[in-house]
Amino acid sequence: MNEDLCLSEDQRDALQEVANIGMGQAGSALARLLDTFVALSVPRIQLVRVTELGKALADMVGSSCPVTAVRQSFQCDIRGEAIVIYGQEGTNQLWDLMGYEPADEPDAAAERELLVDVANVLVGACICNVFEQLGRSLSFSRPTVIGENVPVEYLMQPSALPWKVALLVEVNFSLRDRQFTSHLLTLMPEDSIRQMKRALDHFLASL
Amino acid sequence: MPLPVLVVDDSAMARKMLIKSLPASWDVDISQAENGIQALEQYRAGKAAVMFLDLTMPDMDGYQVLETLRREELNTFVIVVSADLQPKAQERVRALGAIAFVTKPVTPEKLLPILKEYGLYE
Image (cartoon, rainbow over all chains, first blue to last red):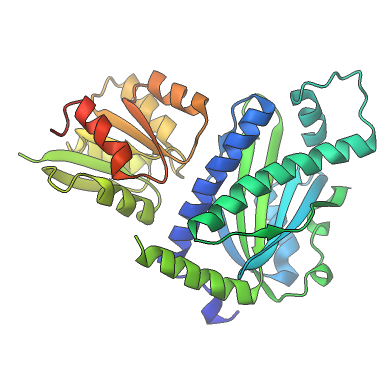
């Protein structure tokens, strides 16, 4: 792996802290949406070879259960992919938390729409805030479902991502009294990692 | 004698930002900790008349620090500094004995009224 892609200790620390603040925004948005308390995680940062991405995702999500995921691309001078991963129970739990009656048996389209909407809220609040802290504003693609009830390793096939190395940033949101956790991952390719390192240096120098 | 102040956060950058936000003329002796375990050690060594405490940290988080302080009837002014914006997080830390909750990113304007209110800084 290229040396110049590795984050210095200061860069990693700064990225973790801006991710922490972004996660706070997203957690608050999710808490308002679901009217419940959302527990936040410590952001995790990892530089991975794309060929090993599946395994890295599985380690971070920490579950062998099938997952459903929503993907959204973001872009400024730094570009990347944001992916929200829900566990198997995620859909039912969300349906229930949104105050829909269990009797209103959700059809597949309505379920998908809910997962996409929640993902959009998390991505919008967290990623926008992170880049705002770094003095940037983003544009996003429309969110799309990239896998339904599939093993997490299958979500990001190396062929679907024409990069060699990715910077992976993970935060997660869990509800204490429910079996609900959703992971928000961002992946950035080589050119964006270099740009991100510059952005973090600039940010650190401005403190 | 300078007031012993402890800054607890797993991020070095966050600790730096907090320390820079303290009043320049405040007569304090600042120590730092990266997690809850270190924070309690420093507290027991007399380094924390005032503690600025992050919530999300590896190896014992801020909630666990507050619970330990309360269970062992330990006395310090704890000001929680967190990216968590949820009103319930604020309620929880106040119920656990924190005197205040400051949301990140921290600024001098957010800290000063709290320090004045508790007579920690004139």
